[in-house]
Amino acid sequence: MKKKSIEEINERIEDGSVRVVTADKMSDIVNELGAEKAVTEVDVVTTGTFGPMCSSGVFINFGHADPPIKMQRVWLNDVEAYAGIAAVDAYLGATQLSEEKGLDYGGGYVIEDLVAGKQVEMRATSYGTDCYPRKELETTITLEDLNYALMVNPRNAYQRYVAAVNSTDRTLYTYMGTLLPDYQNANYSGAAALSPLSNDPDFETIGLGTRIFFCGAKGYVIGMGTQHNPANRFGTLMVSGNLKEMNQDFVKGGTFHRYGVTLFVGIGIPIPILNERMAKKTAISDAGIVTEIVDYGVGRRERPVLRKVTYEELKSGAIELEGKDVPTSPLSSFFMAHRVADELKNRIEQGEFPLSLPVDRLPTDTVVKPMKQPELPLVKDVMIREVNTISDDASIADAAKLIMESGSTHIPVISEDGRLAGIVTAWDISRAVARRHEELAEIMTRKVITAGLYEPLELVIRKMDRSNISALPVIDDRNNVIGMVSTDEISKLIRKRKKWMWKVRI
Image (tube, rainbow, N blue to C red):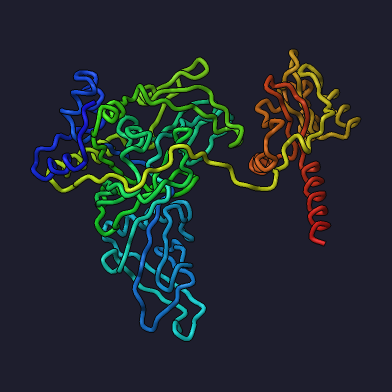
């Protein structure tokens, strides 16, 4: 097997003879020449990704004031940073929101403003001590004024992302962007064949200490990212780099509409082609990277995988889902990912970016566990199982009589085949009488908000609150009504749990 060392490659970088290609070109090279010949022809493959990486932030040292202050709380452009580190140190998270502007501005924008050389308003408060007597401070700072500004991102460069869709009848605002109802769009992220971890999925050359291109600066992999889940091909990296050396073209604040603030980060990682195995791995194509289409309209633990899809399909602009074409939209920028990979290629060819192998490999078998928490009540724990229903061809008088006899103010309306067709309430009946309607079909609500048997009660409460309703039907997979859940039953469960907790404390 043809092999070469990292030292040989660095010698070629130093003398200008190194051969570098971007990751999207490697597939054609290997297909044409074969893996063995590709090792001879290519020394380094450069990767790149540019997308929203919420798990990002900056450690800052402001320097001591006169008189000195031990910052208990600190804000930058009205965005609070975590000050529980030392007297004048803080960590500004990219997703932290402005206390005044809310979703329109946050930590990601402050970081971008600092890199762009803009002045940032700083405000700090303290409880005061003998050696740090000052209790309040207001000033303006720039990146140049700071002693230290190190971007440390706990989780970046996801190996891949799922594609998100929405099966419900309302728009969802998520970290995967705005998801339109009834599968009207599919959002995805990642740089596909240019993605660093798609080109080294087993972490042979990317690990602790690997030098990377990080927002225009030289950065490093400092460990596995939080939620590192390579067993399911969701590996992540923890990375760091000097904010003062970064280029504003590669670090941008952003907002997901009605969800929150993020930071768009440009990361490029060089992959040394040490042997045929690495040549084959970096020959990955968009058609060879598979992910899942997931329904975000369902609770997190129950989200169904609707089908598998390749990045080639996603990048085509539309995918087939349940018999119809669904438009696709990337959250990442392929243009900027190419620019990152090209910029890294140029720096290596100019002798400015020697390669480094990791001092320790990242694990390849870890699996992310869900949070340990008390068992959440589900719909099945509170729903009424004996439900009065009415046919969709019934009269309003029939519905009024059923409401009086059952004492229920919400009656599911059933079609001829036994499935949920709508819902009618006592208020609907009163309004119908006033307007002289006679047929139930004229007044019933046809777009019914429903719940599933194993849906967390917390999500159902949010549905009720958002739609200003007090009850909804519980349905099975065939849209048959199997129960009702109401605010009255939820209140009973909450009172019962509070009573039990009080007994435990005593």
